[in-house]
Amino acid sequence: MKRRRKQWSVGERLWGMGAVALLLTGCATTTVGGSAGCQAYAEARLSLPPVETIADVPAPWAEWVARTDDRMTGTCR
Image (cartoon, rainbow, N blue to C red):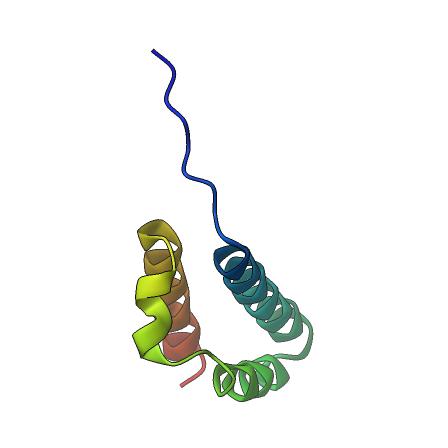
């Protein structure tokens, strides 16, 4: 029996792509410049959407973004 996947809305796709781009940009900067990457991540983190919008994102994405944010924040302290 085939299952149909739920299609992501445009908002979910944009939020997911934005989160991935944000995190990958921060990681690339961290590996090249050291503390400059942490500074870039701190600045980018200010533009994250409000926590209330987390319900609009599929659970796996929300969990991944939260775990990655925790790791980046912990690394850059």
